[in-house]
Image 1 (cartoon, chains in turn blue, red):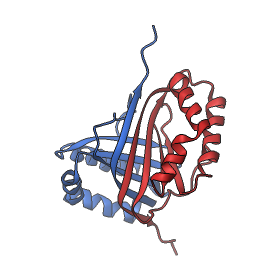
Image 2: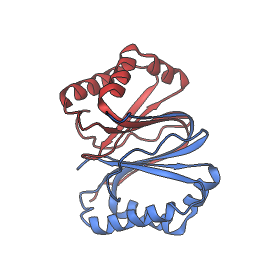
Image 3: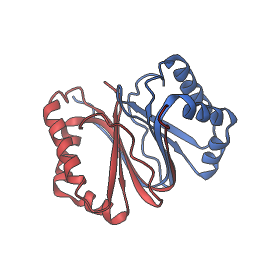
Length: 120
Length: 120
């Protein structure tokens, strides 16, 4: 996706949704340009969904990738799930990009955030 | 943590819990030995919790880390949250290791997994 984040997405007031997408890419995802362009496009599209709260992403080189998207409510989830371009990208992911993945759609019941105090 | 995973944790039958921990380390977490040893010890401890279902971990070099732990029910969560060594590690994390982090405790309502068919 885009640049390294300076900080994780913060804790919102529950309830809200966390959509956890864990994946391992095929070794053939050596069309990183296409994959990357699609990932960027998805990030652009999801950010327009009313109720979208943010996204965290981490990538172990050669290993597991985890993306967590945060949404205010089930309506926001539904909008994102029904997006035509998103569905096409998912299909292409299964056909070409992913060796395996798991999706967990979960309602956040409790959350908290920590930010270090600046050193003096 | 340990070696690169071959595959993400699979989808369990809902409901179950996903605990999403997103973090950025301090630049001073240049005691990677101590940090790593504690992370390994935590993985060993959590795996003994009845109802623990597994863990996914991804680390963007120099950026965000995401760990997602899966638990069957609130009792399992409670046991892990109350573990004395775990609490001591959390305290040390706030004192030394993390620049910022967010914890989201969420109940999974829906999940699915995809695994590519072997090529012939």
